[in-house]
Amino acid sequence: MRKYLLLLIFNFSLIFSFSSTTNDVENIFADEYGYQNEKTSEIPETLNILQGMRVSIIDPAMIKDNYSKRAISLIYDTLFTFDKNGDVKPHLVKNYKWLNERELLIELKSGIKFHDKSILTAKDVKDSLEYLRKNGTLKNFYSEITDIKVLNNKELVIKIAEKDSLFLASLSYEISSIAKRTGKYTVGTGPFFAKSFNGKTLKLENFSDYFDGASNIKKVNIGEEVNETQRLIALFNEKANIALDVTEKAFNSAKEYGIIDEDISVKKSGETETTALMFGKQKNYSIESRRAIESAIQRTADSFFPSTMFTPRLSKVDTDYSTSKAKDNINKAGLKNREVNIMVLNTNTNMEQAEKIKASLESTGMKVNILPHQADSYYIKFQNKDFDLAIFDVTFNRNYTVFNLGKVLLYDIGDMEMYNALQPFLKIIKEEKDKEKRDQVFDKIVQLIYKELPYIPISHGRTLVVGAEKYKYIER
Image 1 (cartoon, rainbow, N blue to C red):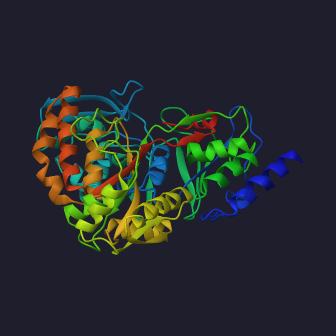
Image 2 (spheres, helix red, strand yellow; image 1 turned 45 degrees about the vertical axis):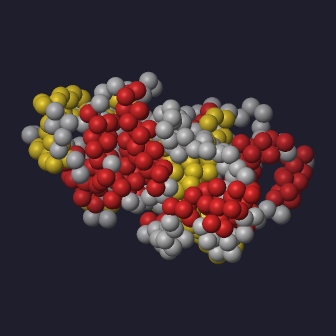
Image 3 (spheres, rainbow, N blue to C red; image 1 turned 135 degrees about the vertical axis):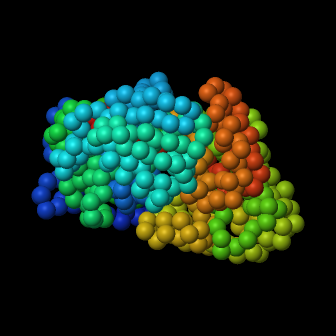
């Protein structure tokens, strides 16, 4: 009785929230197989995972968002990976050798199977990497691959344009996962295969022939619930056993109401998210206007890129805020009484952030409209930069410094001209083996990007994984 009373009180407290749930959590994991979450032992057979948005695509070369990226490592494998110390190590690869600074010889492990039971060959690797550099979301990032020569079923040589001390790391990114594309199907070699993908919930099943040992988890279902409090309620009701993308604010609120079990395991996600206000192409904002808008927004981000990536010195951000100074800047830039539209992904966290930014800008005399979008329309508009302003979450992984930079420039910002202009600095980073020296150059690059102010960093932080004791069974 107490359990349902707590739920009633907690749900009532959410009625006045501007963001509401978009899914029936009771049935989100029910499908043609008829299973929902089961009473679990220490190692459950089925993992039901709720995240902030749905998986939108399961082709590794085409991923654009962090929600889809999570599924990629379950379905596919990369040639290389990172160990716990952050060092690159072979994964699908048995042996490798640099023949010279520009040619990498790779020997694949024997007997690795795709989900269609065919054996992984050197030609499969070539086809997958060729597809990535010709068609991938970040194809320009892999344009340094100039040729791939297959020697036999297990060996191939990858040629790159110039020396790159981080090339092996680039072959560990999820986007470079090896995939076999046959007609409309794309299959991988990972520990799980896609059983069904209906655009709402991705259902995975255990691959018994996985080369690194079959998982104890039999099924993984990844569903969407945009309201993080509803994700936590689903855990409380045992309709899900893992909730991702949970802020500490929502977690603590649920804990106060007794919705969170005392023994549940919680940890911070391994990636850092920057919530940013991005400038689109619908209006042409001068640097003066961008700086004026920046001065009008109260924020916690004290560096352009998060400090988890490197120690920012040149790319520090001034977080001092003054209402009078902000009003003066807005007036000087001719933005007073100017109407702006903020595109936002329709999640409760992003909507809350949009309301805060709206209040800040309106306090300086601007007029602000908030335009919420569902995932499909949001990402289409974002990719084409068809918006005035947009709230966007930029994801960073500390192991992938150069990749993060490439992703930000080529996709998040979408500025090929800036990417090309920074190539001399990127070349230095790729040739430098000392991480501390690389970070110094990286700091300089980020400073140069910040001078152009393609977006305004609002906050840096890591969300929570609630149910981490179960998530560890599939985390890679």
